[in-house]
Length: 282
Length: 347
Image (tube, rainbow over all chains, first blue to last red; front, side, top):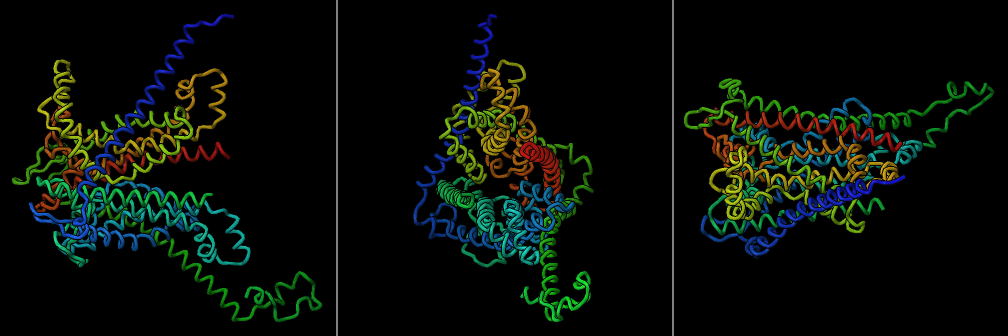
């Protein structure tokens, strides 16, 4: 029996070529992502100063900070998380506990996953039609409502996934003691999945802290200090959007500083979520 | 409390046959019975509570469709189907057609997906087959973290860093290079603005890359090890294993992941708005400025004066919602089928 050496060689070459291309693709992709982070941290840290946290957003040509935008973002995001989390957890509980195999659940899962990746600008339009058009004014309430709609699907998805990880033996043990279903869920499964549910909330915070599109025509933005929820309120992403589009150098620097703040928040939340998840698994 | 509940007031088995005991002589005091009923009612109430939270998800979805349809009604009545194929967008004369936005949305997203899929698959192959084991987790985790970076960061990077670089160093050279090649000379022509459809696609490509690579890597990891080992035992090279075993097994998942990423790209607002140029026209050249549905809405909605103008923008939003719905639904159906199969393989 004789082997054709040429076939061997050809296969070896082809293997080397494709593996090289894969490595090249990986390097290509990672380099761009690295460049973005580098440029964000470089420009962001250069523009960061105490003023960013203490002064209001400036008029064109003046210096200022992002204090009102930071406070606005924190207020609206907190409201959205406070409002969205209970609904999300309850709905996720139904999907994993009461209606795990119900026909309704399949439908709800499908719709929820669509909402999870639906364009956020559409959510903005929806809240505009629902609230802003009826109250005739942009308001922080409307902004928070838009963010709530983005929070709910994230929490539903993670809550369901985390509850499904709870072993059935735990539920059965509790039920065997005579505990009614609601008590089993509240005292046993929720407690067993607590870390996972908190992870979901953290991910939701990470998700909404960078959302811009739904805030543009709900909370609108406000150049001045305002904590009145019935009035327009500024937020970090919306200020970044307006300032980056402007021709002023000072505003560009503030936009970079804001982008850095958002990214650090998001990364911190995601890393915390990941740590929480891994401590739970081990 | 439970023990007390079970203790009957009568003496059990007082001369009667055992079988009748539970039925006839076993009575529960009123008070205990009420406790059981109460907890039953509480249980039903809680179940109802979780059920209504579920319905809220459906209500939100239906609400979005109804609110957008109502908002778009004046424009639909005024322009009918012509909204879908007319290109002119003139707020002064109240003439609105969505074609330029729809075209820009489709072209930029599809282009981004075609660029991102090969690179994303490359990253996944690198992570599962080539990369040294000790580096796999750190690289994989950093890619997943990058998937969470807000799109506005990609947007301002595109505007301040990428577009000027592209305008000065790549675009003029590239336009010259393809100047005599048919088709390409039309696709890449015109003055170097730096911003335009191609720049938007490129930024979108970078943005959806982490999604595609994360999904693809996860799907690759579901390929049973015995399948791969069998192929290696036959003397296959790494590439032959990837091409003949891993990719066919993971096909549905990869396509599903790509569709999911396409859905994201179609609806993406901030990464695109900064760099697309916001021009309501359809140009052959990919270097020319254009617009997308989401960019049009983001730029013009707050300044839209007049009911017809605003209504036309909402109709664009409705169209976007439908397009992404179809794409995301297809993605989900594919990924669900895969989940089922993966469960079957393990069980």
